[in-house]
Amino acid sequence: MTVRAYLDHAGFGRLRPPAVSAMRTALDQVMPYGSAELGQVFRARNTARRTMAGLLGATPEEIAFVPNTSTGVHLVADGLDWRPGDQVVLFDRDFPANVRPWLRLARHGVEFRWVPMRAGGYRLEDLAAVLTPATRLIAVSHVNFATGFRIDLDAVCALAAEVGALVSVDAVQSLGALPLDVSRTPVDFLAAGAHKWLGGPTGQGVFYCRADRLELLRSTPTGWYGFEGAAELTKGPGPLSYQLPERAVAARVEGGMYDLVGMVGLEATLAELAAVGLPAVGARVLGLAGRLRHGIAALGFTPATPFDGTPSPADSGIVSFSCPQVDSWKLVESLAESGVQVSVPAGLVRVSPHYWTTDQEIDIFLASAAGLKP
Image (cartoon, rainbow, N blue to C red; front, side, top):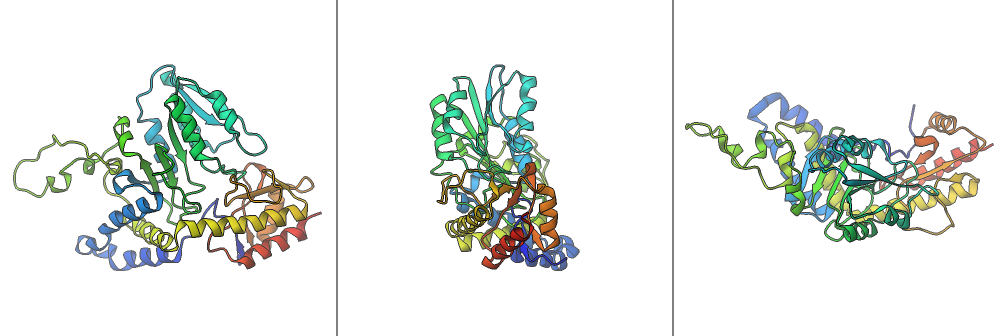
């Protein structure tokens, strides 16, 4: 079936053409020749690291590449030295990947405080109300996966600082679509997969760890390349030394051999994002999302978050709604039959355009949705 309007970047982003081309070249011209040609692709990871650092306002030493968002979240949840009575703040109706790793900490005596969802989003006064001197960490998603509510991370960090808490961010629904500068917004940890808004390959993800927080992660997996001097360890004729210090950079969590082809693809898609610039990407995404909000309201659908006709700081690239007269699953299936790709998390119809989405695709969606309205 021909897809006339692809509006599901919050579910699965389209692999960007530069990534497809770079990965195809690696598969055709490098991988079949083994070590004779591998030098062509090994440099991609360091290039991608520098580019990702630039996009986030971080340093390359604060960036590590991981397989997915969950791996990054677990690096923090499993790596901190938890004590009985420590409290972790969680958000009601957050995605399971940013909840389950923390709930496992109950075995260490960790306690949990929950921020309720109200009208599809979260109120800062509710967050402030659950913070105590025992709050060790706030586990927050930058953008809620279902409703599209974007929380004010600057305010979250300010509240965390008042009680000395860490902030860990699941950014899979914002990284690549909305600007975030960690040099100004002092989150401590951040994780995101590349297969959504970054437009990268599956099995690739980003982990950010603020430099002065790295030593807090006491149980990080390091792999053989996580140690200083590991690259030269097996090159000399002398005896091997295994008494090597851990590298003092986030990359020490990356382990050993990785997906070389996927990394080539990620490097290419990050380079494209950097060339466009995340401010331009964000402006386009929010502009298209605004068109969708107005169109959905005009059709009489029920938005997942309040909409008064004006832009809000809580807006993101996700626009979700429901229709009391039509089951959301059936609505999404009918849209798919007309060539419009959206998704349906938590019983909501979720529409998510990207920078490369055309205005015509928005028109097609709205016309198709209008035709399905009872």
